[in-house]
Length: 358
Image (cartoon, rainbow, N blue to C red; front, side, top):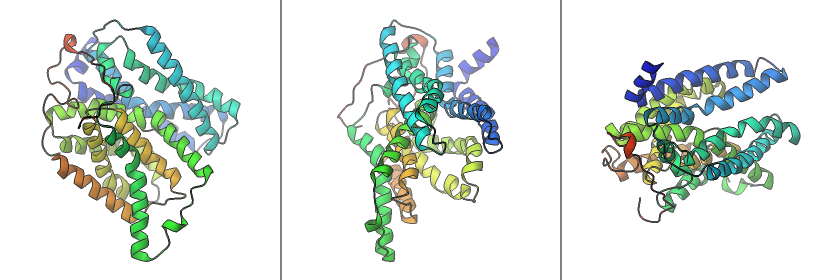
């Protein structure tokens, strides 16, 4: 055990990728296998919990490796952490219960709330760890509660996908003559479902749980050695392998190659771009991810088009050229992990939402 911990300390990024892959597969593959092969309530509850824990593996492993690597502690108010824990748990509980009610299961309020109680502990634990006694964990997760960077980049994270979808419809209408835009109808039911999906993704299935690992841990460390472009291409290649269990179910009609290999390299680059533009804030790509996934619900009113996909690729190419992403970031950039950081050198500087250029 001691040798394993020492190896993790020496190889934090390698151990993060290895542990995340093994544990995610261990939890997700059984869940996916059982999902469509049983209708027994107890097994379905196991599938639900196993899947939720599985998608939280990236940020949890990032926290584990961070704590093992830099275990130094410093005083902080525990009451503040527990207050944040309680608030986030309550909000996350309501959000997941709403998601269960509006999803395929369509459960009633009482069973939805009961099932959501342990699941809501996950985001509460992660976000409240921004006030942990472990100094390195506070530094790691601080941008979830003290976001950095210019406000404009958070608007970019929130609005990029809705704008691209609408522009895609407009271009398609212009080229084909079909009344695409005039047929868009945003009913209160669709807007509510989209809002619930956005909040659910942010807390549970792509937001803080994934981006806390991919950006806050992995990209920041990869950018110590590589340019943002190379770091994000490496991340995309790893994510292709990690998402195989999900893609087996989601892309049975053969769209796997088109989506995962055609679009996701550019989406990954945009996530990394927003992360760097907000000076290493986990919150921005978490919002970006939630905005992207919520479009799956909104597609009932605003369908995706080929034009939208082309615009997405062009936007990513613009980001690469505009920021010269093939060049390494300065070593002192907040989105670059210090190459020779010592346990006693990790310090937190409280930051708010800045207004200067990122």
